[in-house]
Length: 479
Image (cartoon, rainbow, N blue to C red; front, top):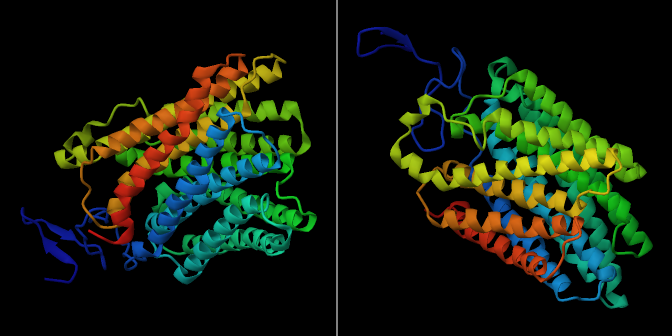
């Protein structure tokens, strides 16, 4: 019989895809996923390339991220005297979450997942690993040295200023190397017309990674300025623009892109059509640009329009994608019972994340309309940001991580009841973090709000700590 031709059970002839061998482990491709005539381009880089940096992202989130946030919340509730140290630590907490936790987690997962989506191995694994090393080292230097500068003796401040500036430059260098590795990978592989799942989200990826690079360029410049002027805290206007660029320019578009590709697979919901997806990209990108421009230029009307556009996008994407309320397609009823049990709680995390995205959309839209109408009812910027970060992004990372990481580590997922505790604690953390500033926006304050605000940090630490404990064996290579 000729090579590549075999007979099925019914005696019919079928043609095998050249070079394509099925791998029947969890999380790896099955036969028929490549277009006819396409050849698999060898194995991807092992998960061990990025696993250490996922561990680092979780460690940063538990210390300078949620850990520092919990300490700041308790200090505020106890009436601590606020000063320069407070402003500095709040800025460190924000960047640790957006760059150290969300950013590093997204980039590490992207370096492992996007080559598979492209159908080609990672083009430059050494460059990618060097980029992750530089980015991780830069984040650690930033979150360690900037707080120390508020309490250190004058004689040791010189080396700390150098370390702070070096940290900003390393972050920028690491991001540049990672983007180069991803760019080279995207130029390889089969034609993009064969990779419809990738081509439809390329605008989101391009905009998101560009926003990240520009934000880290600004962060490096601010670090150099801080080292030159001897002021540990970044200027408030610049820090607001940096935070909004990382949150609305980078994290939201990338999360939408990954979700648009994976949610139909995980939840059996319909794909978002190309035209609505492109319209969503226009809303996300325009809203993010207007938010950052308003931060820089202090333009209230521009800020309001940006909030309104982002609110429409945050409301529309969950509804168009069918998450959290969409029904599963009939074909997915054939999922093995073991798989359904294993992914019940990760799915709960993802669905609750998209419920929070709807809440964020309603708040952003109502705030933008209120500002345009000059209404006094405007929501706290702190509440709006944490609805997205604590509510949407954190729960999405925990849910998608619980689904993706076992497959990446080539291990069979198991039903773990502790992930239910992660879901409950994560949702309570978001609720306790968002409700007090929302209540303050309408003039409601008191001991209950203070207690809730103080409980947000411990709940977040419980959720992320339990998730880290659950995933650590996978990330450490232990079975």
